[in-house]
Length: 123
Image 1: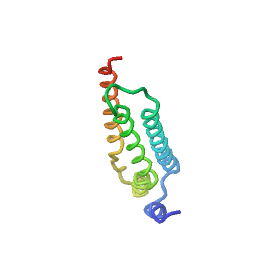
Image 2: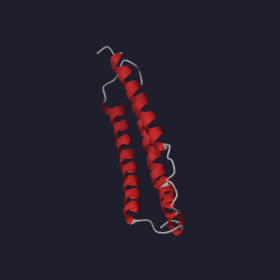
Image 3: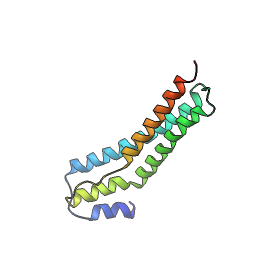
Image 4: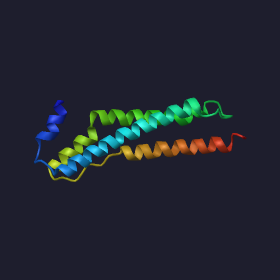
């Protein structure tokens, strides 16, 4: 167990186990989402037919891979999980995470770019 994990468990009082398990499931969902984004980005860059626009596949796929990597790294360091655990132990409101907004914006922009490339590809 890392020092950070011990720090999260040493503050406040033990929360209801259901909340800790829900926090852990959320963490695992972020890891699954990161894996899905990286897989989708890789599939787009390698398997999607070429667009008339040079580099179109990379323009869609690479941001998805990048945001997936950021999510995985954030999940590995468990920043949000530990913040939530500390807040629950101290009976404080859960902290805000900007990661969902970042993911939504990146996925939305990639979808918009993909739609524009499909419309103007002439196929």
